[in-house]
Length: 183
Image 1 (cartoon, one colour):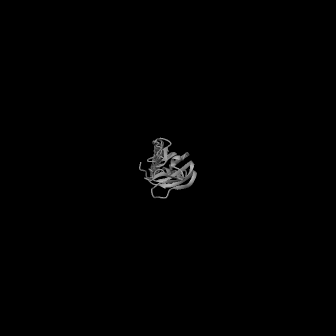
Image 2 (image 1 turned 45 degrees about the vertical axis):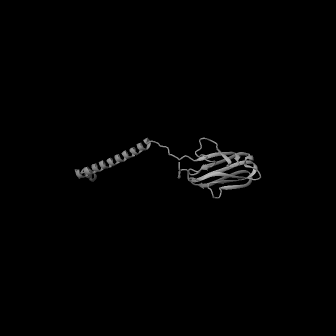
Image 3 (image 1 turned 90 degrees about the horizontal axis):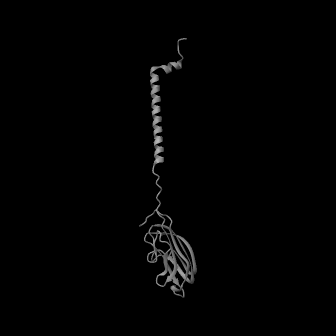
């Protein structure tokens, strides 16, 4: 028994098993190296990729004032700013994009009048006010491309030119940009 080695030393020193153990360790090291290389590649691509900010479509909006009334055209709409994303054409606001619009109408009048806000000919108005001296209304409406928002005014016992307006404004803000737009 003096010359016999313990059993585990015999297994380690066997020539066939030593080769398989080294081969297995070599394969495991190569797999770990490839995994590390893939991780480093992913990290480098993530940090060095060009950072492009997301592109959001512009929010369409307009703030129009009306301060005087014409007997033929009704209230004359005037844009408050040159940087508006919507325009006034023929005393109405054409809708360039499908979607929901927040519409605000405010104003104080020197005479009693009836006022309605329309978006299509031969359709019910978005809202109407009869025999009022002020209006302060907000509505969300679904409008489509080629609709035109306009005011219709009817005076009682006086001409439209005699009516004075204080703080008259019509505001439209598109609520869901990114839908169909003609522009």
